[in-house]
Length: 107
Image (cartoon, rainbow, N blue to C red):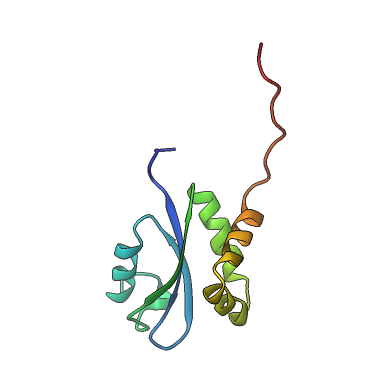
């Protein structure tokens, strides 16, 4: 892993009122791509997007798991995440891989 490179999960509202969840290293550039019609197929013709929620993740795997967890939620639950961002923290903890048992210290 390259240090200093983090991934961000974002939740954005499209101009038609729908919600879109994605991940990116550079959210500003990714939203610009969506707005230009070269981002995800879903967002084409639905711009401009407004970012509602951001959650940084240590690595791409964690970001992908959190994105998937958010995408599985019904719309009302996604809207609740926007109002109560602490819920995203709880989801991120649940989406993280389980920690392995601590290794015994080496002598």
